[in-house]
Amino acid sequence: MPGVVEIPTLQELNVEEVNVSSSVLKAAAHHYGSQCDKPNKEFMLCRWEEKDPRKCMKEGTKVNECAVNFFRQIKGNCAESFTEYWTCLDYSNLAELRQCRKQQKAFDSCVLEKLGWERPDLGDLSKVTKVATSRPVPENPYHSRPRPEPNPPIEAELQPSKHGSRLFFWNW
Amino acid sequence: MAASKVKQDMPPPGGYGPVDYRRNLPRRGLSGYSMFGIGVGILVFGYWRLFRWNRERRRLQIEELEARIALLPLLQAEQDRRTLRMLRENLEEEAVIMKDVPGWKVGEKAFHTDRWVPPVTEELFNLRPREEMLQKKFGFQWYV
Image (cartoon, rainbow over all chains, first blue to last red; front, side, top):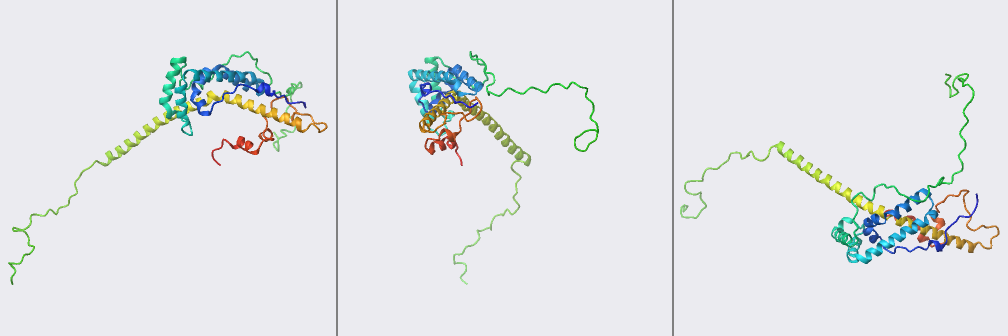
């Protein structure tokens, strides 16, 4: 069906972005994963079920809101220890978490006492969770054409074939 | 001959003492079995340390992967928005470029389906400098 591809306008795509570099994101990743869990999981569920980014713009906006809020809270409360942590991570090319355990401990204790956030244990973020949404499950997300009907059942009596099997040269 | 009064290097009076000329091959050191056992013990100790360190590395790797898992929704949302923004800009450019061509429908679908077709990189970056497309295609590669 030829038509026009609908693309959201630039106005709708204008969302408050998190202006932050990769080591900052990695430093805060574990706490971000446990705090902003709900909108993140909803967005991923929407994306994977609908298989269409245009249908998940609202959830994407919520993800960004949560992220911006999260970083605002950190900046308001634990700015110095967080800065030390992510500058330590930024020092190496690979940003290995194990090189910066001291700063991580300082940051974790600061966040725990000021905001009450606990760092999730190993393996908690990779657990499979069930997400409760109000969005209904989309049917036919691939927009496939209606499938053809199955063959009607054979009504007559089935006889063995005359002259044996027609497969190559066997005659039984 | 005046031999007795010249200073010569003579043996000490009474001759030299007894010289020990017998073979000196003492039986010492560990036996073969114990040396073998020590070697095997060192090996086993090394393996044990290795396995422990590998488990620790696995835990560290899981931690790094979990950091990536936690950040994926944010990165995916940003990537979606970026793609849609580029498509929108391309659409508006297309409307400008093809406004005098008769029978051209701006933003027409290329396929007969309603589903979302992810745009091809070449088409997305068509109106931008070639470096941006190469960065998108090969930017993550660390080796050649």
